[in-house]
Amino acid sequence: MLTTYSFTRYLAAKKSVDDRALNQHVWRCLTRTLAPGTPAAPLRVLEIGAGIGTMVERLVERGVLHHTVYTAIDADPETILESRRRLPAWMLTHGFSTLEQTPTRQGFRRGEDVIVVETEAIDLQRFVTGNRGRSAWDLLIAHAVLDELDIPTALTSLMALLRPGGLLYATIAFDGATILQPEIDPTLDMQIEMLYHQSMDQRRIAGQPAGDSRSGRHLFGHLRTAGVELLDAGSSDWVIFAGPEGYPDDEAYFLHFIVHTIGNALRGHPQLDPCQFAQWIAERHTQIEQDSLVYIAHQLDFLGRVRGEVSHL
Image (cartoon, rainbow, N blue to C red; front, side, top):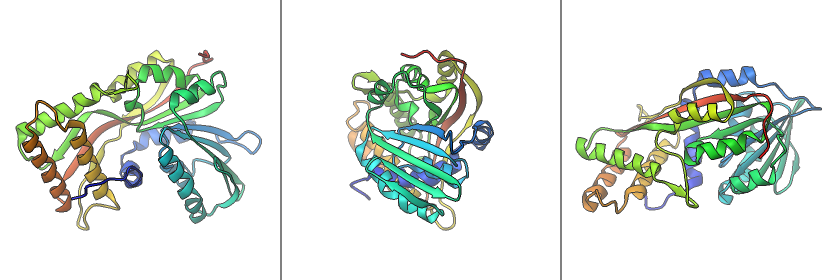
């Protein structure tokens, strides 16, 4: 069983999980609705919580980005450094040549397409404050991140960064179901799931609420309040199981990381016997090593459009 875990490796392992999970109906709505950029007026994309850059890779791989300036921010400097390291080689294998490389800006060309990726390790609130009044972006992407924020406050700030008519693509918003099979002890399994979700409901970052365990369903109301016209929504569940060749790609590591995360979230919880809980965690790791663990998490994707003029904060 692993004793140390790498968050950047987890994010890389998560890419194939997300590829399967992203709702294809919502994705197609995005690609139909998003106006392509031109050399004179490139598409301007902002991604918050961008991690190691797997979303920009996905958008390029699926032919969504052509003439684009893509701004990717994340509060974690390590993940931003990894995104800067991995993107040039990835773009090269997909037929792009390098135009420019600076510590914060990377440019690439393939045929007539020019894609510039700007990265910054910065806290979201600092970024919002520094860009107040710009309303510059055509598309804002929040991939697997809104359920870790105080959504009503975050949406109010973020929508002011979009131009009137700009799009919000919010994906993998957790929505209240963590399923691990096979059962170990049905009563204990249910208690751990309940307490794990409760830890999300009680989570605070810098003293402020940070999402909740039913963020997905709550987004319908939050988007309406924030003045966002909902264009499409659908489920984006993670479903991971071992096939004849075991778990795909590096998804066994992804599962180990999830179990480790549950262990960290509930370690020392007064309602759990520490020995029994430690044994439960160890057994889940063993199930992964034996290719027997099935993991399902219920999540939702959303595509919305800012209505009319956006008031600046």
